[in-house]
Image (tube, rainbow, N blue to C red; front, side, top):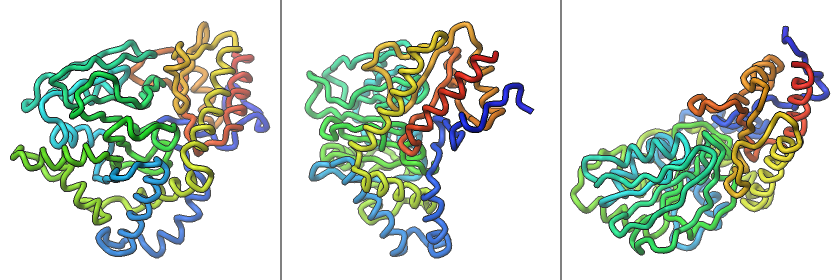
Length: 370
Protein backbone atom coordinates (compact mmCIF):
# COMPACT_ATOMS: atom_id res chain seq x y z
CA UNK A 1 0.00 0.00 0.00
CA UNK A 2 1.22 3.52 -0.78
CA UNK A 3 2.72 5.42 2.16
CA UNK A 4 0.63 8.42 1.13
CA UNK A 5 -2.67 7.74 -0.62
CA UNK A 6 -3.80 10.57 -2.89
CA UNK A 7 -7.61 10.86 -2.99
CA UNK A 8 -9.09 9.69 -6.27
CA UNK A 9 -10.95 12.99 -6.77
CA UNK A 10 -7.60 14.85 -6.85
CA UNK A 11 -5.75 12.53 -9.22
CA UNK A 12 -5.51 12.87 -13.00
CA UNK A 13 -7.78 10.62 -15.04
CA UNK A 14 -4.70 9.17 -16.73
CA UNK A 15 -1.50 8.95 -14.71
CA UNK A 16 1.01 8.88 -17.58
CA UNK A 17 3.17 12.01 -17.87
CA UNK A 18 6.37 10.57 -19.35
CA UNK A 19 8.63 12.38 -21.80
CA UNK A 20 9.53 9.14 -23.56
CA UNK A 21 6.62 7.62 -25.44
CA UNK A 22 3.56 9.84 -25.14
CA UNK A 23 0.26 8.80 -23.68
CA UNK A 24 -2.14 8.05 -26.52
CA UNK A 25 -5.79 8.98 -26.94
CA UNK A 26 -8.42 6.31 -26.39
CA UNK A 27 -9.91 7.25 -29.77
CA UNK A 28 -6.69 6.14 -31.46
CA UNK A 29 -7.08 2.63 -30.06
CA UNK A 30 -10.77 2.52 -30.95
CA UNK A 31 -9.93 3.40 -34.55
CA UNK A 32 -7.01 0.97 -34.66
CA UNK A 33 -9.23 -2.06 -34.09
CA UNK A 34 -10.76 -1.93 -37.57
CA UNK A 35 -7.41 -1.11 -39.20
CA UNK A 36 -5.76 -4.05 -37.42
CA UNK A 37 -8.42 -6.48 -38.60
CA UNK A 38 -8.18 -5.40 -42.23
CA UNK A 39 -4.61 -4.16 -42.75
CA UNK A 40 -2.11 -5.70 -40.32
CA UNK A 41 -0.07 -8.26 -42.22
CA UNK A 42 -0.39 -6.33 -45.48
CA UNK A 43 2.80 -5.59 -47.43
CA UNK A 44 3.92 -1.99 -47.13
CA UNK A 45 4.34 -1.94 -50.90
CA UNK A 46 0.68 -2.70 -51.56
CA UNK A 47 -2.02 -0.13 -52.25
CA UNK A 48 -3.73 0.04 -48.82
CA UNK A 49 -0.52 0.87 -46.95
CA UNK A 50 0.79 3.15 -49.68
CA UNK A 51 -2.51 5.03 -49.43
CA UNK A 52 -2.00 5.36 -45.67
CA UNK A 53 1.51 6.73 -46.17
CA UNK A 54 0.23 9.14 -48.80
CA UNK A 55 -2.46 10.40 -46.43
CA UNK A 56 0.11 10.82 -43.65
CA UNK A 57 2.44 12.80 -45.93
CA UNK A 58 -0.40 15.07 -47.06
CA UNK A 59 -1.53 15.57 -43.47
CA UNK A 60 1.96 16.51 -42.33
CA UNK A 61 2.40 19.00 -45.16
CA UNK A 62 -0.91 20.57 -44.14
CA UNK A 63 -0.05 20.58 -40.44
CA UNK A 64 3.32 22.22 -41.07
CA UNK A 65 1.90 24.72 -43.61
CA UNK A 66 4.71 23.55 -45.86
CA UNK A 67 5.71 25.86 -48.74
CA UNK A 68 5.66 24.61 -52.31
CA UNK A 69 8.52 22.25 -53.06
CA UNK A 70 8.89 20.90 -49.52
CA UNK A 71 8.53 17.12 -49.23
CA UNK A 72 7.97 14.54 -46.50
CA UNK A 73 10.58 11.77 -46.25
CA UNK A 74 10.19 8.62 -44.17
CA UNK A 75 12.87 6.16 -43.12
CA UNK A 76 13.39 3.14 -40.90
CA UNK A 77 14.74 3.79 -37.41
CA UNK A 78 14.17 6.74 -35.10
CA UNK A 79 15.62 10.24 -34.92
CA UNK A 80 18.94 8.83 -33.72
CA UNK A 81 19.16 6.87 -36.96
CA UNK A 82 18.58 10.10 -38.85
CA UNK A 83 21.71 11.61 -37.26
CA UNK A 84 23.72 8.98 -39.14
CA UNK A 85 21.65 9.55 -42.28
CA UNK A 86 22.55 13.24 -42.08
CA UNK A 87 26.29 12.69 -41.70
CA UNK A 88 26.31 10.26 -44.63
CA UNK A 89 23.79 11.91 -46.95
CA UNK A 90 23.56 15.64 -46.15
CA UNK A 91 26.87 16.87 -44.75
CA UNK A 92 29.49 18.02 -47.28
CA UNK A 93 32.51 19.09 -45.27
CA UNK A 94 31.77 20.35 -41.75
CA UNK A 95 28.95 20.72 -39.27
CA UNK A 96 28.19 23.03 -36.36
CA UNK A 97 26.04 21.86 -33.45
CA UNK A 98 24.22 23.60 -30.62
CA UNK A 99 24.37 21.46 -27.50
CA UNK A 100 22.34 22.12 -24.37
CA UNK A 101 21.43 18.62 -23.33
CA UNK A 102 21.81 14.92 -23.98
CA UNK A 103 20.29 14.64 -27.45
CA UNK A 104 22.06 17.60 -28.99
CA UNK A 105 25.28 16.17 -27.59
CA UNK A 106 24.70 12.80 -29.25
CA UNK A 107 24.29 14.32 -32.71
CA UNK A 108 27.38 16.51 -32.21
CA UNK A 109 29.46 13.39 -31.50
CA UNK A 110 28.15 11.64 -34.61
CA UNK A 111 29.19 14.63 -36.76
CA UNK A 112 32.80 13.85 -35.85
CA UNK A 113 33.35 11.36 -38.68
CA UNK A 114 36.43 10.34 -40.74
CA UNK A 115 35.06 11.97 -43.93
CA UNK A 116 34.14 15.34 -42.37
CA UNK A 117 36.20 18.02 -40.70
CA UNK A 118 35.87 18.15 -36.92
CA UNK A 119 32.59 19.88 -36.09
CA UNK A 120 32.26 23.11 -34.16
CA UNK A 121 30.32 22.34 -30.99
CA UNK A 122 28.73 25.20 -29.06
CA UNK A 123 27.93 24.03 -25.55
CA UNK A 124 25.55 25.73 -23.14
CA UNK A 125 24.83 24.89 -19.53
CA UNK A 126 21.82 22.58 -19.17
CA UNK A 127 18.81 24.82 -18.58
CA UNK A 128 19.99 27.44 -21.08
CA UNK A 129 20.92 27.54 -24.76
CA UNK A 130 23.68 28.90 -26.96
CA UNK A 131 23.68 30.66 -30.32
CA UNK A 132 25.20 29.67 -33.65
CA UNK A 133 28.49 31.27 -34.71
CA UNK A 134 28.49 31.40 -38.54
CA UNK A 135 31.59 29.93 -40.24
CA UNK A 136 32.37 30.06 -43.94
CA UNK A 137 33.26 26.36 -44.17
CA UNK A 138 30.24 25.02 -42.26
CA UNK A 139 27.56 23.55 -44.52
CA UNK A 140 25.35 21.90 -41.87
CA UNK A 141 23.96 23.62 -38.76
CA UNK A 142 22.19 21.26 -36.35
CA UNK A 143 20.22 21.79 -33.16
CA UNK A 144 17.25 20.43 -31.20
CA UNK A 145 14.02 22.40 -31.48
CA UNK A 146 13.20 21.04 -28.04
CA UNK A 147 15.86 19.43 -25.85
CA UNK A 148 13.88 16.64 -24.19
CA UNK A 149 16.43 16.00 -21.45
CA UNK A 150 16.39 19.53 -20.03
CA UNK A 151 13.20 21.22 -21.23
CA UNK A 152 14.99 23.92 -23.26
CA UNK A 153 13.48 25.18 -26.52
CA UNK A 154 15.36 26.77 -29.42
CA UNK A 155 13.21 28.71 -31.84
CA UNK A 156 13.36 27.50 -35.44
CA UNK A 157 15.48 30.10 -37.20
CA UNK A 158 18.12 30.64 -39.86
CA UNK A 159 20.83 32.82 -38.28
CA UNK A 160 22.12 35.86 -40.11
CA UNK A 161 25.55 35.46 -41.66
CA UNK A 162 25.56 31.77 -42.50
CA UNK A 163 26.40 30.62 -46.01
CA UNK A 164 23.51 30.64 -48.48
CA UNK A 165 24.37 27.03 -49.34
CA UNK A 166 24.37 25.84 -45.71
CA UNK A 167 21.54 23.65 -44.46
CA UNK A 168 19.67 24.04 -41.17
CA UNK A 169 18.74 20.71 -39.53
CA UNK A 170 16.17 20.86 -36.74
CA UNK A 171 15.75 17.87 -34.43
CA UNK A 172 12.03 18.08 -33.69
CA UNK A 173 11.28 14.74 -32.05
CA UNK A 174 9.65 16.15 -28.90
CA UNK A 175 8.44 19.34 -30.60
CA UNK A 176 6.79 18.18 -33.84
CA UNK A 177 3.04 18.50 -33.55
CA UNK A 178 3.22 20.52 -30.34
CA UNK A 179 5.10 23.73 -31.18
CA UNK A 180 4.32 26.03 -34.11
CA UNK A 181 7.19 27.21 -36.32
CA UNK A 182 8.04 28.78 -39.66
CA UNK A 183 9.14 25.98 -42.02
CA UNK A 184 11.00 28.42 -44.28
CA UNK A 185 13.53 28.89 -41.45
CA UNK A 186 14.85 25.34 -41.65
CA UNK A 187 15.79 22.85 -44.35
CA UNK A 188 15.18 19.54 -42.60
CA UNK A 189 12.69 19.31 -39.73
CA UNK A 190 13.02 15.70 -38.62
CA UNK A 191 11.48 13.66 -35.84
CA UNK A 192 10.34 10.31 -34.55
CA UNK A 193 6.58 10.18 -33.92
CA UNK A 194 6.32 8.90 -30.34
CA UNK A 195 5.92 12.27 -28.58
CA UNK A 196 3.28 14.84 -29.63
CA UNK A 197 2.34 12.60 -32.54
CA UNK A 198 1.33 9.91 -30.03
CA UNK A 199 2.63 6.91 -31.90
CA UNK A 200 5.35 4.32 -31.45
CA UNK A 201 9.03 4.33 -32.42
CA UNK A 202 10.92 2.75 -35.30
CA UNK A 203 10.38 5.47 -37.87
CA UNK A 204 11.98 8.79 -38.73
CA UNK A 205 10.07 11.45 -40.63
CA UNK A 206 11.47 14.65 -42.13
CA UNK A 207 10.07 17.77 -43.75
CA UNK A 208 12.71 18.64 -46.35
CA UNK A 209 13.17 21.87 -48.29
CA UNK A 210 14.05 22.00 -52.00
CA UNK A 211 17.58 22.98 -51.00
CA UNK A 212 17.88 19.91 -48.78
CA UNK A 213 16.58 17.70 -51.58
CA UNK A 214 19.19 19.17 -53.94
CA UNK A 215 21.88 18.42 -51.32
CA UNK A 216 20.68 14.82 -51.02
CA UNK A 217 20.98 14.41 -54.79
CA UNK A 218 24.41 16.08 -54.85
CA UNK A 219 25.92 13.93 -52.08
CA UNK A 220 24.45 10.78 -53.59
CA UNK A 221 26.09 11.60 -56.93
CA UNK A 222 29.46 12.38 -55.32
CA UNK A 223 30.61 8.77 -55.05
CA UNK A 224 30.67 8.77 -51.24
CA UNK A 225 30.01 5.33 -49.76
CA UNK A 226 26.56 5.41 -48.15
CA UNK A 227 24.96 2.27 -46.67
CA UNK A 228 21.45 1.74 -48.03
CA UNK A 229 19.78 2.14 -44.66
CA UNK A 230 21.53 5.53 -44.22
CA UNK A 231 20.83 6.80 -47.72
CA UNK A 232 18.60 9.86 -47.77
CA UNK A 233 18.41 9.41 -51.55
CA UNK A 234 16.80 5.99 -51.14
CA UNK A 235 14.50 7.38 -48.47
CA UNK A 236 13.53 10.22 -50.82
CA UNK A 237 12.85 7.91 -53.75
CA UNK A 238 10.88 5.43 -51.66
CA UNK A 239 8.90 8.17 -49.92
CA UNK A 240 7.85 9.58 -53.26
CA UNK A 241 6.39 6.12 -53.94
CA UNK A 242 4.73 6.10 -50.48
CA UNK A 243 6.80 3.40 -48.79
CA UNK A 244 10.04 2.91 -46.85
CA UNK A 245 13.19 0.94 -47.71
CA UNK A 246 12.39 -1.88 -45.27
CA UNK A 247 9.07 -2.96 -43.80
CA UNK A 248 7.86 -0.35 -41.28
CA UNK A 249 5.65 -0.97 -38.26
CA UNK A 250 2.18 -0.50 -39.70
CA UNK A 251 0.76 0.39 -36.30
CA UNK A 252 3.26 3.26 -36.04
CA UNK A 253 2.11 4.60 -39.40
CA UNK A 254 -1.55 4.27 -38.42
CA UNK A 255 -1.25 5.97 -35.02
CA UNK A 256 0.89 8.80 -36.42
CA UNK A 257 -1.59 9.46 -39.20
CA UNK A 258 -4.54 9.33 -36.81
CA UNK A 259 -2.90 11.90 -34.54
CA UNK A 260 -2.01 14.20 -37.44
CA UNK A 261 -5.60 14.08 -38.69
CA UNK A 262 -6.85 14.82 -35.15
CA UNK A 263 -4.56 17.85 -34.84
CA UNK A 264 -5.53 19.15 -38.27
CA UNK A 265 -9.20 18.60 -37.51
CA UNK A 266 -8.95 20.70 -34.36
CA UNK A 267 -7.26 23.67 -36.00
CA UNK A 268 -3.82 22.46 -36.93
CA UNK A 269 -0.46 23.31 -35.46
CA UNK A 270 -1.60 26.70 -34.15
CA UNK A 271 -4.27 24.93 -32.09
CA UNK A 272 -1.76 22.35 -30.81
CA UNK A 273 0.72 25.11 -29.96
CA UNK A 274 -1.90 26.99 -27.91
CA UNK A 275 -2.85 23.80 -26.09
CA UNK A 276 0.70 22.88 -25.04
CA UNK A 277 1.33 26.49 -23.99
CA UNK A 278 -1.75 26.35 -21.77
CA UNK A 279 -0.64 23.05 -20.21
CA UNK A 280 2.94 24.13 -19.54
CA UNK A 281 1.76 27.48 -18.13
CA UNK A 282 -0.26 25.61 -15.53
CA UNK A 283 2.89 23.83 -14.38
CA UNK A 284 5.23 26.81 -14.48
CA UNK A 285 2.75 29.10 -12.71
CA UNK A 286 2.34 26.44 -10.03
CA UNK A 287 6.12 26.06 -9.68
CA UNK A 288 6.61 29.80 -9.29
CA UNK A 289 3.96 30.18 -6.58
CA UNK A 290 4.91 27.03 -4.63
CA UNK A 291 7.46 27.60 -1.88
CA UNK A 292 9.76 24.64 -2.61
CA UNK A 293 9.70 24.66 -6.44
CA UNK A 294 11.05 26.74 -9.32
CA UNK A 295 11.25 26.16 -13.08
CA UNK A 296 14.65 24.66 -13.91
CA UNK A 297 14.89 26.77 -17.07
CA UNK A 298 15.15 30.27 -15.64
CA UNK A 299 14.77 32.32 -18.85
CA UNK A 300 11.12 32.05 -19.98
CA UNK A 301 12.22 32.44 -23.62
CA UNK A 302 14.33 29.27 -23.26
CA UNK A 303 11.54 27.35 -21.49
CA UNK A 304 9.88 24.50 -23.35
CA UNK A 305 6.12 24.28 -23.67
CA UNK A 306 6.16 20.50 -24.19
CA UNK A 307 8.66 19.33 -21.53
CA UNK A 308 8.47 21.04 -18.13
CA UNK A 309 11.41 20.59 -15.75
CA UNK A 310 10.67 21.67 -12.17
CA UNK A 311 13.39 21.98 -9.50
CA UNK A 312 12.72 21.22 -5.83
CA UNK A 313 14.56 22.71 -2.85
CA UNK A 314 14.63 21.07 0.57
CA UNK A 315 12.50 18.18 -0.69
CA UNK A 316 13.66 15.00 -2.42
CA UNK A 317 12.07 15.03 -5.88
CA UNK A 318 12.82 11.32 -6.28
CA UNK A 319 10.73 10.61 -3.18
CA UNK A 320 7.86 12.63 -4.63
CA UNK A 321 8.11 10.78 -7.94
CA UNK A 322 8.11 7.45 -6.08
CA UNK A 323 4.98 8.36 -4.09
CA UNK A 324 3.25 9.55 -7.24
CA UNK A 325 4.14 6.24 -8.92
CA UNK A 326 2.66 4.30 -6.00
CA UNK A 327 -0.54 6.23 -6.69
CA UNK A 328 -0.54 5.44 -10.41
CA UNK A 329 0.95 8.78 -11.53
CA UNK A 330 4.02 7.66 -13.43
CA UNK A 331 7.15 8.75 -15.28
CA UNK A 332 7.59 12.16 -13.68
CA UNK A 333 11.21 11.35 -12.74
CA UNK A 334 14.03 13.67 -13.79
CA UNK A 335 16.17 12.76 -16.79
CA UNK A 336 18.48 9.99 -15.62
CA UNK A 337 21.76 11.59 -16.80
CA UNK A 338 21.02 15.17 -15.76
CA UNK A 339 21.36 14.48 -12.05
CA UNK A 340 19.08 17.29 -10.86
CA UNK A 341 16.62 17.31 -7.96
CA UNK A 342 13.61 17.81 -10.18
CA UNK A 343 10.55 16.38 -11.85
CA UNK A 344 10.29 16.26 -15.65
CA UNK A 345 6.76 16.32 -17.01
CA UNK A 346 5.59 16.01 -20.62
CA UNK A 347 2.90 18.45 -21.71
CA UNK A 348 2.37 16.82 -25.08
CA UNK A 349 -0.72 17.72 -27.04
CA UNK A 350 -2.68 14.51 -26.34
CA UNK A 351 -2.99 15.40 -22.66
CA UNK A 352 -5.90 17.62 -21.65
CA UNK A 353 -4.72 20.78 -19.85
CA UNK A 354 -7.05 19.95 -16.95
CA UNK A 355 -4.87 16.91 -16.24
CA UNK A 356 -2.05 19.23 -15.18
CA UNK A 357 -4.30 20.97 -12.69
CA UNK A 358 -4.99 17.54 -11.20
CA UNK A 359 -1.29 16.66 -11.26
CA UNK A 360 -0.27 19.79 -9.35
CA UNK A 361 -3.07 19.21 -6.85
CA UNK A 362 -1.75 15.69 -6.32
CA UNK A 363 1.82 16.92 -5.80
CA UNK A 364 0.57 19.55 -3.34
CA UNK A 365 -1.21 16.79 -1.42
CA UNK A 366 2.06 14.85 -1.19
CA UNK A 367 4.11 17.91 -0.22
CA UNK A 368 1.78 18.60 2.69
CA UNK A 369 2.42 15.10 4.07
CA UNK A 370 6.14 14.40 3.70
